[in-house]
Image (cartoon, rainbow, N blue to C red; front, side, top):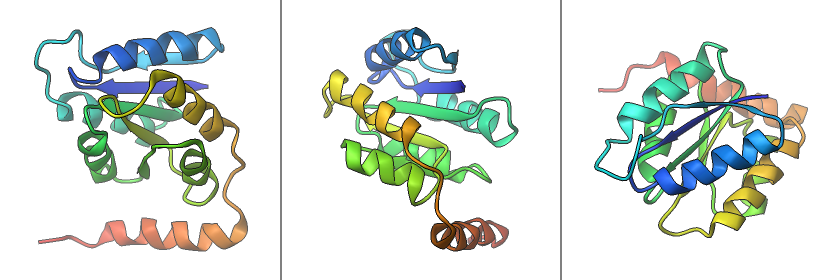
Length: 149
């Protein structure tokens, strides 16, 4: 699987750990994240990473910032992307099986690195959304045609 990684400076260390973990499992990882721990704005990473998924260059994405909120908001601004803020394995699995999220986001300042890895594993092995969930996903996608002012 091809996985896009995004981070800001607060998520840099976690992103590096996630990258090694995913590559160790045989995934191809494209790193859009901060190059180090010096100040780096999360939109500069999350937008191109999310776009790479929207156009099919990458299959999924794992995004990390201090709280997870910033990268999650950015990912959800990209047409065709559904992103979830994840904080435990159950929510990670639901992000895949209930809403078909292609992106999951983590708050590096609030989560243990091992729990992040467990959440990623739960998300990657979760089943695709069942028919009853697809109806809801189509409604989410349909909302993208409306311009908010």
